[in-house]
Length: 430
Image 1 (cartoon, rainbow, N blue to C red):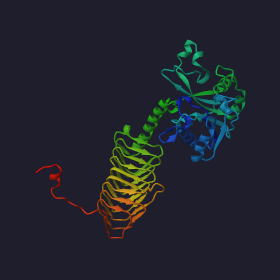
Image 2: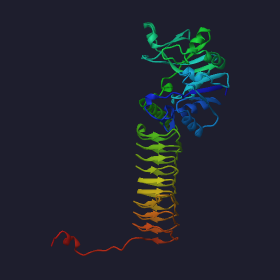
Image 3: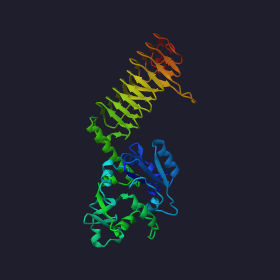
Image 4: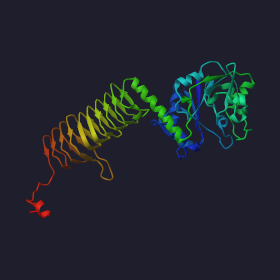
């Protein structure tokens, strides 16, 4: 890997109107900055993230997920702007690719296109039907001649449709020369990275325009942009999964986290939400079910089932309005209206409607262990910690507070009582 990557993530992002740093807003389960880092790691072993606003918070989040990422703190008070962000940045390799941390839709293929060739600078360029509001990139003889801000364009230049996409691949020797020469002699009093293009052209360096797709270089600056980027990312994720063999019913209604993985032949119905690093193998996820950070194998979930984090569901039927949390179920049937939390349940066991594991006493969580071939009647409460061994029957309406023995029938209910003719007396009927 002979390319360094610098990711600019120092901006405040005021248009997001949020206390969360812009680059930590999530798209398909991961902060947008992480998508850029993921793409960069596929092409480089020398990655630097430039920070300023809420730098410690962003750095801490990055370090939870990644190793060997370098950090540079921008002196934004003295050197504001994109050019100021590059002041003091050191790169290891002979070329540096400069990315923006708010471009989560960038792909490895797009980055590879920018690092190819022997030009002094490769500059990403987008062709827009309506370039209004953007600086124009003037291209002559297949080389970038200049970048003209819209307010400075003459009428002929306003007709130019090529605009700057904001990503550059620059030879290290030019960065080392040009970045110290940047100044803030402009209306905004900022140091602009685009000024290195002007310097390069003036010295007859080759600045090569690389035409890129607008979608991949889309910046996220507002909650509206965030929503649009989410839609694009979701379309990509689901397209790839369907091409790999996953069946989706009304895919536009389905949400799938970028960290989720599928194996074997799977079916995902409408309204499903697959969150976190969930792995689904040879299973059927039915309408409006939610699965979070769990493992599902050879099972069917829902409709309207909920599998919460750290659950393993194997060879199991989970029906409608069943919630499972931090539990392992193997070969189990739980058809309806049930909560199973902090539990292990073995094969052949049937869980009736309305069963609840009472796993929390207000201070601590406790475990429920249910063995093989157990029948748990409807409306049973299992007060943890409790162990039910193999081949036990629990009658409907029972509150289980003690461990059982294999072969037991467990009952806890008052005797039924009938009062003759009470209905007629109550309503004063003869």
